Image 1 (cartoon, protein in one colour):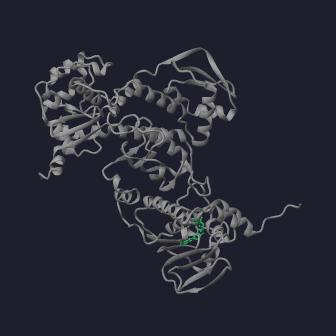
Image 2 (cartoon, protein in one colour; image 1 turned 180 degrees about the vertical axis):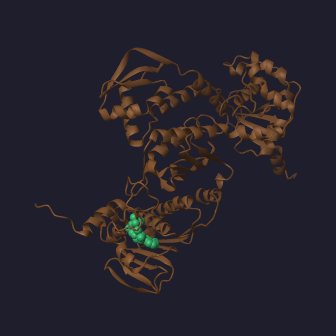
Image 3 (spheres, protein in one colour; image 1 turned 60 degrees about the horizontal axis):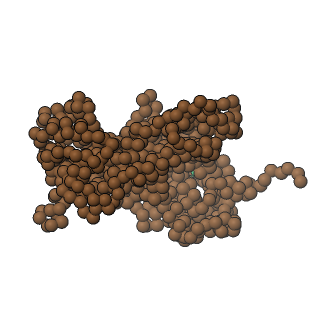
Length: 597
Ligand code: ADP
Ligand code: MG
């Protein structure tokens, strides 16, 4: 068989295989074109999940006749005026979408540009252009999608599922571009000019209201910023549906960013649960290559580990700081007694539930509640601390604390009143009723202790050598620092082997298998959760076995001891499976229930 250059229609259909996967990808390309054309109102309609027709109308600048003719030619684009692929500022640039879509559907374009007296209509199947009375922006109508590619049609899902995929695409773009209004099927509205929180509520649902943490970070060198919102750990989804990530305003599902998000929540969320977020990473366009996948959802960072570390660090800090800021702000308005109280703990050399600690979950609290808790004072505070100091940290439930109620009133979680169902502890603090899930609480405490104190490292007299392919060695080394933090010290041993020099003590695994899994994961996702996930699981199980069980009777002293321990535990607000450990119910809420207010 002789070599031949493929005819255009075939080349386009092959390209369509990459660019046009389903109705949602058509919508994505058309809406991106509308955005590139400067539109600020975009209306999308899909009929039968997009199978029968997809229409996108925009109020952008439109096209003159000549450009309209060229728009459906392969690699014809108006968006690379200076031939510079390293500085891409438009959503599109490949000049592939329109010819690809046209090759697998019947497409018509109506468009108007104000430099010409009238608009034009193009029939992409015949190539015919005629004058049209269209007089603003552009309308692209795609009918009978994949009508000529039955194999593709077979892979489409039900109408509803396809419509949902279209909605998801629009949500992503709507979060990226709040300056633009979007409407889908006259049913989903994202009005122009919403602020980020309003848009997020429109996109993710009402339940996020008041439960998202703002992120506003800049890298030390000032070359990168991360802004947006992430959910507090008690707010989560069973899949990544509500994770919206943007790199230089472009919606992405990039593995480096997704991996970093996951790593940041590792300690506070179960591996099968997903935080919500709308996160915007901005960096110098020269440090990121967006020309990676035809659908452009993946990007290449020049320095992926730098990006990853930056995201993880800032998200972790934010999660840990949830309480701190609010309390400290309130505290600074308070009088000297409290300030002294705060400055003491170090001298007394005990962990104290002062506002220094990020121990309890304020996520659902309003600042008034906190202020109130803090403003209850007690002359017995110091006595209490001295008592506390005598207690053996490790035997949580055996503590025997003389507990003046008013001393405990100073504490965020107050003093225990009793137990219900042998499962929940009721406590009172200032004007709040507090309900604690005793099992979740103890699990969190034990886990945190294990986590922070007992990852002991055991040096190996003879290193364990694992043979691997060169690319796997490179992959494992990419996260060597992270592995070291989890107790695994290793380095390359020639080009095709890894030597392990230290491992977590008392922990034996098939290291070869683990390293290969890590390598696979790093190569697929740019990061690995294998080691941490296993460590995490091991610790979680251990903590669970050593915890106060639901169903265990506790006396008041034991309950108070547990309350104090929660206060002293980092992220004490959630158990290590991400469930809440306690709820604070202000008396004012009870008043509402009993119709007193
Ligand atoms: P790309 O977006 O990569 O340039 P496309 O095939 O998506 O390639 O579009 C080709 C060209 O058609 C664009 O560069 C643009 O000039 C023009 N175009 C497409 N859609 C629109 C629109 N909605 N409004 C104005 N011009 C458009
Ligand atoms: Mg395009």
